[in-house]
Image 1 (cartoon, protein in one colour):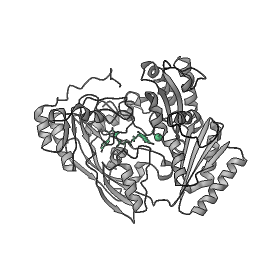
Image 2 (image 1 turned 120 degrees about the vertical axis):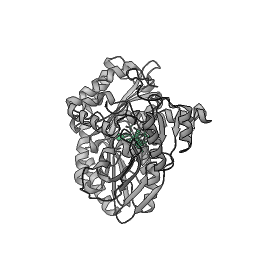
Image 3 (image 1 turned 60 degrees about the vertical axis):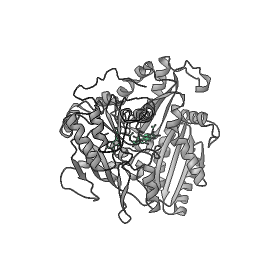
Image 4 (image 1 turned 180 degrees about the horizontal axis):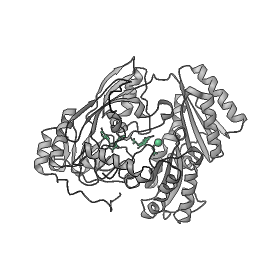
Length: 494
Ligand code: FAD
Ligand code: MLT
Ligand code: ZN
């Protein structure tokens, strides 16, 4: 796991005492070695999903109500004890685990569905509700959560809002900045901020909830959200295509937008390397024969199966007759539909198979989006970290880099550039950074499209944001959290 040679523990923060732990025990359940727990029980809270970052927290607090959260933060603020809010711990930038001995406040036990109005589609839920649980609840009421992502079985809706997660259907349902209508949060001094509006329209001053969307636990702890949910589509289709070039991916996207129009609900790209690695790790039979440099998954969601099928068939025929795609398959039933999605959603997990992965989640104008993957591959080869022409199973254990892959949300110009490695290695990191960031800055892209900053991107945010923007952000942070106790050492330097 990563160590932090350029980060020092902030001496403003106190060290946890037995008296602190005794006090917290009067507020809520907790996990601590000084309170009967084993090291092993703390481990999952101190380690991130990628096993790249490791914290040294000695205390996990599990509040059961907003009042518990308030009492915790009030005490931490007065005692200058640093805090890390933790949801499902599926974040990909090292934001959800401590750097040193910060106290972890887990939202796991704050998990009630508060209300749902089937007429407006507005759902109010506690922050600790798991995304899939919220969506399953909505399905019973013929609605859908307007966000979906591979980590849905573990991530919390509070974590989704805290990271402003984008996911697989952003092109259809929009960003959380549009769908989240209200946020209830506890500020660092324990004050409760009730902005849990269920109104679509409310022009009465600054829109405070927006600050919490994407704030990554640096301004306070989100305890509940309200969100507007669309009706659940009754007809869904998934098509999976092989393509010979990135130019063909762009043509297919243009055609999908114009020919599928309002029923288009996802347009995802996977390069050939990513699919080869998924096949290697899972041993599953590929949906299409042979190997292609690019694949695309197109999903439609609508309310009239005949209408959708007619549109999709016309789209397929156009792609085939114009030879935009070289091959394709359409899911015939729910099992096949899920099977095709697995070739896309399964990528993140498979890439970690060899030991580690360097992840870059970037926004780049579409025409140049895939060029970054090619340039990084060349750079890895020129640095002697990847042998040209060899696939992962032809390499030896000494080859540090397994492969360089690209996939992502083409509908949002969001590329996931991933470098899978046998182990985390400073040489790989040095070849990638700041190379990748400079490359993105030249194209006025974003160094983080959806995963956020955490500790991984904190030192690089200047490649996407100007000095004035960063100064205003630092001022906001100091206003909300003058003692700096909320998720320190991350996000931006305040
Ligand atoms: P955590 O990982 O626990 O926390 C993430 C950050 O939010 C931390 O900084 C934490 O301090 C803060 N936080 C968490 N809860 C709260 C709270 N209640 N109040 C204040 N701060 C809080 N992201 C995308 O955008 N799109 C994707 O498609 C996508 N797919 C993914 C697929 C996989 C397999 C995985 C592992 C991750 C994926 N992610 C994706 C990353 C994404 O950020 C998370 O999955 C999710 O949004 C984080 O939710 P979480 O509850 O796990 O938060
Ligand atoms: C995805 O789109 O699969 C997620 O953002 C996770 C990842 O990039 O690994
Ligand atoms: Zn993504």
